[in-house]
Every structure is written in structure tokens, then in C-alpha cells.
Amino acid sequence: MCPSSGTVLLTFAILFRYIGKKYLNRAIQHILSEPNANAPRPLAFAVLRVPFFLEPHYDESRTFIESNRERLVKKWGGRQGWESQKKRHDLKGRGQAAGIPHFNLDRLAANSMASHRLIQHLGKTYGLDISEAIYDVLNEYYFVDGYSLNDRPRLATTVAEALGRILPHAKAPTSDALLTFLNGTEGRAEIKRALMALDELGVHGIPKFIVEGTTVVDGAAHADVFVNIFREIELRGSLKGSAVFADILGSHPKRLSVEVTDLST
Image (cartoon, rainbow, N blue to C red; front, side, top):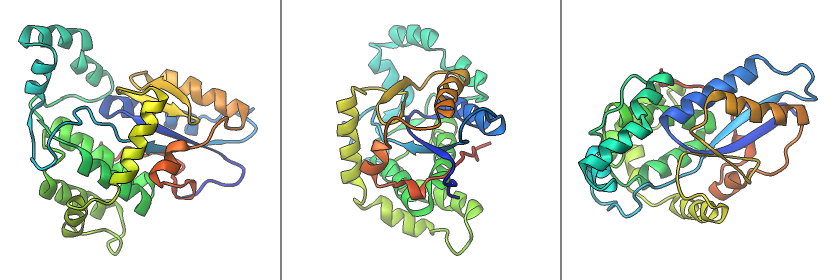
């Protein structure tokens, strides 16, 4: 679905996963369901995923490298440091507040290039509403079920089954077609260019939210923070910048969705 000519289409880039997406969805649905009657034009939304690698050195040829528990213990200098960080970070509590009852601490950590390429491919082929729906599916696949994002046969099967539920049968790709894509290289160059652009913006960690091409906001913010940002743009009735990452990744505005649906629940 494409926005009307009288609509302000806000295309923003996000670099966050499960919790941040839940809060973002709440904010978007709030704006869509309660538009400001004094705004010059209604606001529509397009969410563009920008790839980011927590562990860029992970070997792409391996299905997984280690469990997330092992990764975090090493990252924080041992079990004591990790336990202290857990208390400060409170991922479990923040997840429950966002409506996520469980995180699989022993989920399998792996190089995520193939899965990032797949999400970008789906966005360009079917539209960003479809790629976002699949991203939601993969959030549950990884964070809850604990499967590796580089287990390509399993990933292809999971995504093919999900697409079969949300796309017309004639348009849904087979798991074999998706596996062939995952084992290829298409989209790699665009992802590398996006990483360079992030570096130029000073983005070296996640979660992050990039609006109007230049404004970087902490993606861990709650829904009310996003609502305030959206309301300001809604009242302004225009955008200050362009969708920089849409150009870099090849997801042009004509392909973008005007709303976001969380299909993981």
C-alpha cells in the first residue's frame, strides 16, 4: 500500500531488535489511531532495517560460534562481571514490561550477514511491511527459541513458512529458493555501504533510531519518547531530511509501507 500524495511519509531507519520494536510499534499505532486534528497533513510510516553486527569477526562459514551466555560472560570479563551487568541491564524486566515474557539466554550466536541480506531482499521484493513481519518472526526464532541466525536451512524453512501465511500462494518463495539466496552474495555490497554510513554518523552500537536521515535517538526509549518525536513532525507537516539508508540499501520510497504490523504475536 502506498501513501496518498497528501500524506507525510516518515521513513526512518532502526537498529534494534525485540524490545525496541515493541515500543516503536506502540508509538506508531498510537499516532495512526489518534492523529492530530490540527496537523496540516496526516503522518504515515515506513520502517527500514539497517544492518548492524555485534560480532563482525564471527566466521560466516560456521552455523554458530557460541551460546549467547558464553559470549556475554567473555564480554564482561567473567561470570562476576556478567552478573553485575545483568542487574544493571535488567533485560528480563525490560522485556516483560514490553510484553516479552522470556529470553533464551543460551540462544546460538552466529554471524548474521546472511539473515541481514535476506531481510533486505524481502523488503526490496515484497515491501517493507513484509520484511518487518519477517523480522518479527526472526526475533522470536532467535531471542525466544534460541536458533542460530546462520543456520541457513532452518532459517529458509522458517521464513518460507511465515511468508506462506502472509503472502498469496503464487508469490511466496519456496524454502529451496530462500536457501539458494542465503548461500549467495546478493546484497552484501549494499550492507557494507550502510555500515560505512553508520560509521560516518557516529553510530557504533545498538539500539539506535535514525529519523530524517541525520537525527540519532536511543532505540531503547519507551513508546512515549517516539510519540513525542512523531508528533513534532506531524505538526510540522514536512520532513527536514531524506531517507538516506533507503537509497543506500536500494529500498526506494515507492516500495515502502505506510504502517507497521507486528505479526509475531
